[in-house]
Length: 252
Ligand code: UGY
Ligand code: MN
Image (cartoon, rainbow, N blue to C red; front, top):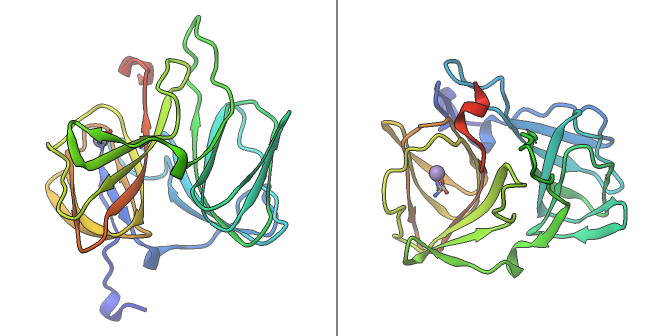
C-alpha cells in the first residue's frame, strides 16, 4: 500500500509505465484457474493505440490456457514455474526462461505443471504475399547466443525469434552491465512492450526519465524517443517485444 496515492505507474499518449503496485487481476477468457493482468492492450493510448497485447498469466497447477482470438499469434515467456506446451508433434516443458512462439491459427494447449507466472504477447499476424507464414519456435533464453549490441561488450542482445520475413514480430532480451546505456536515443516506427526481468535502471520515454526495476512493464508507441541506462550492482535485463519486417504503410 503506497501512502498518499503515489505510484511510479503512468499512462501517457505515447508511452506508459505499469508497475506491479498498480496491477489489477482480471479473468482471461477461456483460461481455467488463472488470474490475468492485462499490462498493455489497444485500450492504451489515445492519439496512437497499442497494436498488440501484453499480459501476465498467473496459473495454478493444472490450469489451461484458452485459445487466442482468430488471427492472433502468441508468444509465451515463463517467468516462474513450469508449463507444458503441445501443438501437433511439439510437446515441450518450459521452465523459467523458456519460451514458445505459436503462429496464428495453430491449435495448441498450454497447461501449468506447477504454479506458474507467464508473460504473454499477442499480435495479429500481418501476412506478406509470397512469404510462408512462420513455424512454431520453442527455446530457452539461457541457450540463445548473446551478441554485442552495436559493438558494446557491456550491452548484449539475445534474439528469441528468427529475423526472417516470415516473422512480423521480434522478442529480444537486452542485457546491460551496470552503467551500460543504449548508445543513442532511438526513434523508430516500431512499437515496444517491455518487461523488466532483472535489476534496475532509468528508462527515458519521450521527454521523461523514469526509474524502473524488475517487474515493471513499459509500453512505447511508434516514434516514442527511448533510451536506457542500467544502474545498481547487478545487470539489468528486459524482455522486449517489437513489430518487425513489415512496411509501415501496412498499418494505415
Ligand atoms: O531494438 C530495439 O529497438 C531496442 N534497442 N530498443 C530498446 O531497447 N528500447
Ligand atoms: Mn527500440
